[in-house]
Image (cartoon, rainbow, N blue to C red; front, side, top):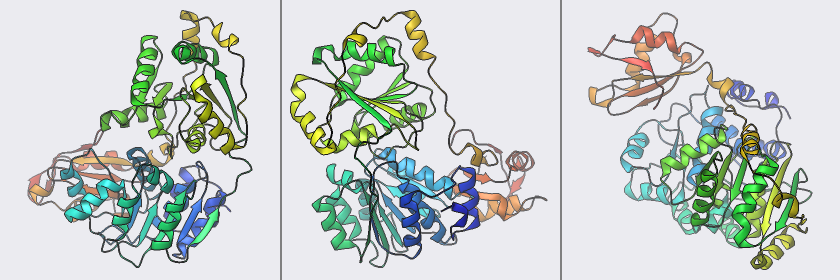
Length: 478
């Protein structure tokens, strides 16, 4: 069905329209009505099926704006996925002014606690950090109505299931729970039996495990040849945008350093890096500022990046499911893509497991064409010409929204109502023009809607609020 036909808040429909959503996917058409009826749902669906919007849309619709405590909790296995899900909630909930927080490890508790004390509708979190907040008493679950377990099988693989169980036991019993997973192993099924009430089971079928829109093939090479072969391969293939998957952090670093040395446009991501660097590298790759991303499987699950033309398995994964998740980064949204794997003589067991799981055999191509590829200044220049800058999917949505910085906060006894009052005192402003408000210790941020932000900043700058002069400017970096 079309999103315009859904029985949801008009403000959500307006955001969906500007985000380019037109018709529901299969999983969305089934799940959205069920969650609106507050039914528990178990969804087994492949990556790229549109599952995030399937739960975000009905839960944003159900959120009561006036309630200050979290009403929705989404648990995800990785920080990258938590941030992505938060962004989807931010985008879809823009005009309903839904406040969403992403909570994960390797961030200071202090700032997370400050954020959790403010009006917060949705929390997206990794299990370990969320459980820490529950134990500290800094996450108030008393008003929680909805729980989402996203990529549940990956949380199992990463050893989080016991943590997830500990979290659920501390949440209100009366709630709606939905679980999304690519596979449903026994432990996940046991989890659903313990904590879900007569859930509807949704299995979005696919004609075959490997998407038909992905051209998948492999090269048989020795381990010692991999670096040289990879370099010649990308010069030959000239991908517009590609992820190169390696088995370990050390391999990622080795491949990354080799490509940097050869003046290739590349970033890397693995669990041993600083969180800030991981997020920056992912965002650069998402926007097409770099052509290649070398990663461990941390980037294989749930990360939705547009127009990845190639996935290269520098190492075959240990688990066959991860092969499917990796190559699923390409050929998204009905586009085509290419998946290339390197197979060494030590990969026999991994190869057999993947072929059994996908019910297909690797197409082995001849190495000679790649080995004969000439690498010179001209070929490298042609490779870089393939880089395509990408725009954020929320560009249309955000063009009429301006985030303003106010140099006053809690320490000067400023509350959200004070900022709303100051803004609404302007002639052509009212509450409908004000989006999400964040009041911090020493400053505040307010999103102004409907293209009025720049004039608000100019008119409020150096005016008085509670007897104090405030500085107001456009927030370029929060």
